[in-house]
Length: 213
Image (cartoon, rainbow, N blue to C red; front, side, top):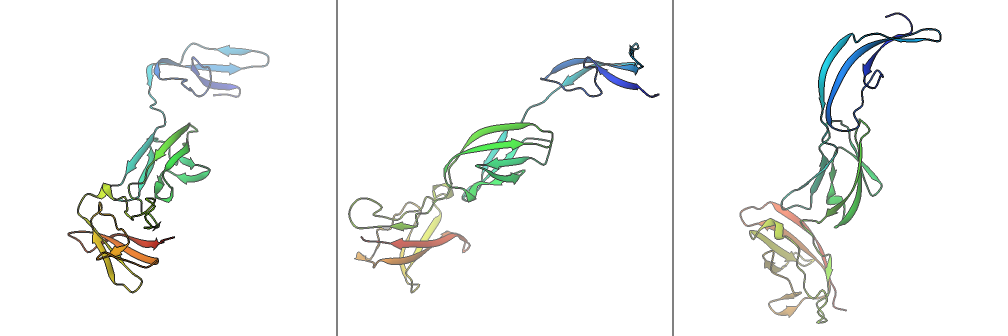
């Protein structure tokens, strides 16, 4: 086409068509020629017919990973990369929520097409482990028990003192009261290891502090 000529899409009369919402649209291609002080529109070059516009919009997909502290947050967007912002921290395409504590988070998404979404997301850790307890009879934190309910009943927990002596074994619903064979264990640091019954592979391990004051 010569200078000043362009192809436009009707009904917007622009080189591109942006649908404000889902629906069925009639689309024609027209020829426009811009002269000095005049604009000429010619009959349609081609009638494209009807065009259906579908857009499902952005949504958040939350996938807990069984028997871990992981919850993977992704999106349904086809326009990647998607920037995911969680309480001011930015990620690309997905977020592993194991780095966050249980709570409600403000999540915002922006895909490469410029579509955005803001939403609150509830997150609850599938696994949580207390770091200390105080078996002093005040009925507050008198026992130690991790939250491993998501892992089923086949988990076994072993607790050791700093000399690697075994002081407690039990299942995920068995609390430790800070004793061994009915004798109170001294204050200090202890270590636990959780495994499945049929495996030597460690599910998780960590430190516990026993306080009596």
